[in-house]
Amino acid sequence: MAHKKAQWTTNNGRDSQSQRLWVKVFGWQPVKAGGIIIRQKWNKYWAWENTQTGKDFTIFSTIEGKVSFEQKRRVRFDGSVYKDIYVNVK
Image (cartoon, rainbow, N blue to C red; front, side, top):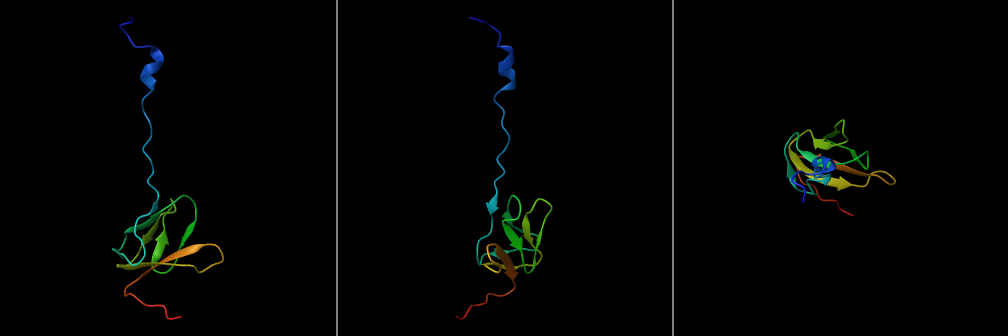
């Protein structure tokens, strides 16, 4: 039995951290200014009212309030942050 490890084994056993993407704050939950709402790859969700998109496509809040997800365009879903809760009357 060998007393030393094979040369290739010292390079194995490491892996990168997972990115932990997706929604961090769901509908009507409170969020602080600068709080991350969605971590995403590319533009699946677009920033709307009182939100901005970071350079890595992270959507974050610009004001303190409650999060609302709305369908504004044909396929895309948009997120908004409101100071007060409102009720849609249909």
